[in-house]
Length: 485
Ligand code: NDP
Image (cartoon, rainbow, N blue to C red; front, side, top):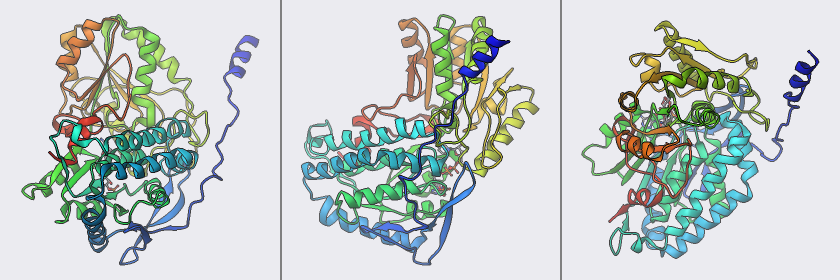
């Protein structure tokens, strides 16, 4: 009994909250157009909340068609007069400056991102912000080398890029979109997600601080209708979108026949495949990272675990033990593993799909876990006894919910992994290098991780097939999407 108590005491963590004093959130934010913060033409605003407490954080300008039009005109003027003609080596200096300012102000960005999004501070601090800075550093390096990048002797920018991003990695998705576009000489109009506008607006402030010429970056905050106005604006040359497959299809229809260039990074339902020769502890960490990182709000999340039948009980036993150690709660606490769900709407979707999983006959399990009284929360959840036809095996849940299926042979693993309309990512856990290569050749996914999961690097192209979209972001391939070669 005493031993038990001692073990219990050993695992109790004292609260370790990051201070929010480093961030000063204004009561109101304007749109960022032509280098200045301005109200929406019709004065409309919307509130952004802290999803961990439901406390309103700020009122943000809601851009309508007239504002989008102004932003596109500012981007066009900046493209023609300043940014397009500027030598790459000069553009690079601005991108390096933005990257360094992101690093200098990284704590401020991390706290703001966790407040507005609900993600744990250790993830915003150690993943989102450093990777966002890395994207600016990496692309700054390309700005003066585009003629040597294999796109012909004088690749040209496209013009004005309209970029629509989701709420799961607000700053990082902004960096993925802006850094290559700006490095290649385009100017940008960015539409952040309605529930997470604040870090994009702080990035706009950083661009002011870096002396970026007015109009090169414009941020039009608002809802889906703002995104739709941007997508259909005739003054935009290129659309880049990350978000749901449903909206991606709408955008593809809107852009069809206009001559605009388009890249779509959409949903996923990735298989994380564990073979019987995989080191179990490592695989369990990879499974946890695959689906519980960022509350599972990850397009490439390993949301279907395919585990070889002979080791299923052993792997699931360890996995349940490991899930029992995850700490859910205050996103600003440095010990927190699972933060808040980003919005009421997303929580409702996760609940509905999880209820469908139970109704269709799968077995639901969560570790004992106290959910806070206020805010949007969902416990880490495991479904066993899942069959391929279940909705939880087919649809993107976009939450901390793992569907477990088993297989007997590598062929069966491939068939089950590919039995999805998506094709964004996959994971393979095995000791054998030859098996990794065999699997990677057969898995229909844009990214295949071997004995790791959710690894991102600006040098590495990322993107999908089929309903996961088309085009690549990152690396040389990502640059191609912003150039007329
Ligand atoms: P959406 O695809 O609706 O949103 C992504 C971005 O597009 C947001 O900025 C959104 O604005 C904007 N948008 C919405 N409608 C339009 C439109 N008609 N034209 C142009 N832009 C538009 O995703 P949600 O955030 O609503 O999430 C819904 C589901 O999508 C999730 O449950 C998840 O399954 C999936 N998803 C997948 C992501 C991925 O990376 N694969 C990322 C996010 C979501 P606003 O925020 O104001 O609605």
